[in-house]
Image 1 (tube, rainbow, N blue to C red):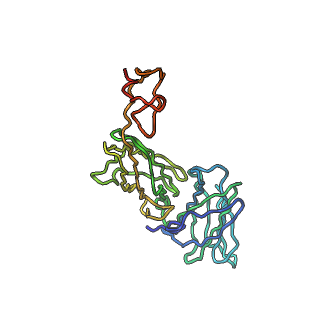
Image 2 (cartoon, rainbow, N blue to C red; image 1 turned 90 degrees about the vertical axis):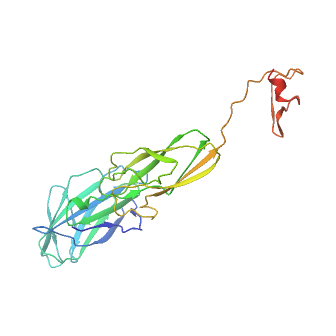
Length: 286
């Protein structure tokens, strides 16, 4: 059982402008009787799930004419001499994922694929070639490199980590990934993240009583076997908490008991003295 994910890590998903077409070489990975290749192409957007219609997919073998693959209508793929190399068919599937089977008539061909972006905006693409249907569905985790937030000393806080799936199969986030003595804990995770979608992982920070900066590393464990440290395929997140001193509530303040000053105005140079009348804060507390 064999599969390959494209673009190869550490490359990012392939960007195509509106109406732009790319031509990509494909490995011939086929198994079974008759030998069959399974191809999955997912369309992505910067804001997670994209809108718009599907891309146009064309396949070619051995320098033959590229043929457009259509849903529910098998099309022959011919080589340069006009001999049939395979029968290609597009199947209905998950949103933004094109599912193609290639039933080979002979082995050993050189394959290319064209992807044309039919949307009015830039789109990004990843794809998988496999010799079996299960491994054609591969997750591609994309987590931010850093999550920074503020907290008040001694007050636990829950923060949200948005995780994207740039792959052709569902992404499943697992428990774990934090050190045993970490101040962070996972308190919520999605049951699954569909291709081209994003979901939130909830982390609770047990805020210490001492102010300062606390940093920890979270490895977002998942079913993505190719997760790495590359910018668009990373599962390593630096969690940074800036803890501020606990803010004590101010006492109720009254007009000054020594003069006719109606209320206390903080003096930044002398915090416990009224900027208006010059008397200490205690005179405004009686």
